[in-house]
Length: 169
Image 1 (cartoon, rainbow, N blue to C red):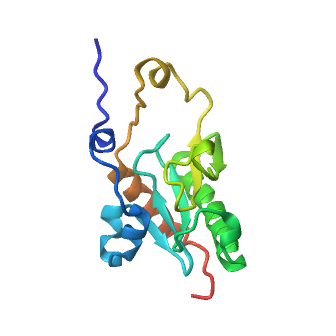
Image 2: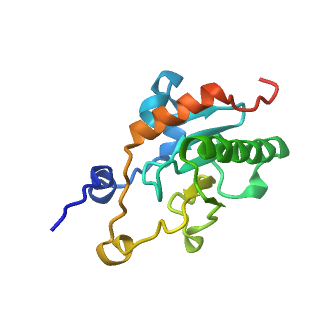
């Protein structure tokens, strides 16, 4: 029998869920903590972060700094910035992972699958033809070949080559 280890999932499974919004907590910290919080980029109204519990390697999220749960709560500038950074995310993920496609989406509300429904975010998930298998269905296990730290380093290197868009910063 083979063993597949996904140690990063353990914290999520056994630890109590935070009472405060982790996204607000991460962004309130000094930018020197961005690598440990997996924040890849801070723009004026939004930021890019690696998903700590990814569906696939390179699973990114774009979030507003503002703690809101709906699109209509955001001003036009923030909405525009979120879409521009989402486009940018597909560009850097294409360079880093060469996926065959992407799932890009927003889960609004628990019924829609939002795990952190209080803080709106856009998921950018790289996908490959045939990347589904029996593991999530039978074993309730997702196999991730790269650690979050390695994903972060890989994407930061790409971001040096292809800088994020600017928004009058």
